[in-house]
Length: 115
Length: 113
Image 1 (cartoon, chains in turn orange, green):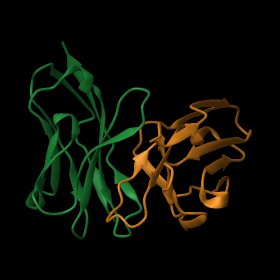
Image 2 (cartoon, chains in turn red, yellow):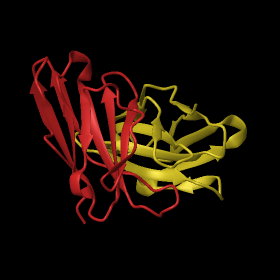
Image 3 (spheres, one colour):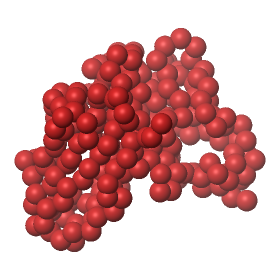
Image 4 (cartoon, chains in turn green, yellow):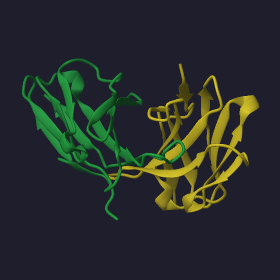
């Protein structure tokens, strides 16, 4: 069974540009989460989808970040325009609905560097 | 608000030595606790989790963790470390809704030959 995949693995962009990160969850997982780790800080929750609906987006830092999950399969996270402080590692995770305190399975992350 | 503290940012142990990574949490209710590991170039892999029951939890790769409510701790242990255990380890607690993991800052483990 394929795990959570993320694309690209690395991205280097200039301040003001737009970047779109993609996450493909484990097949059949309705829950999809985004987290990020800014340099030297903890991994922080960004948001949670259940199928195509945003269940909790309390961790989204500002309106430059837009997450979508059309069709309830893969998800994208767009940063527009990117700022220097957006640099970090963006993780995606997925889990099954119905399991008590569902275990979240993580992807390898996308390393974003904004210059 | 929930929080997790991993007091040790870096730890170096010799191969074959025992290991204990510390984790302290702050949570108002019964915590659901996790340890994840991130090897270089890899994603976060679940080592073990505690939901209820036996406070000593066994995980993969020979790791175990003990939940101590009186100390608000969930320390990770391994009796004999292998070079392949060099990685970064994260302790986490999940919120009541079961959707948001709060992570500690991570402990980077180095293993000396």
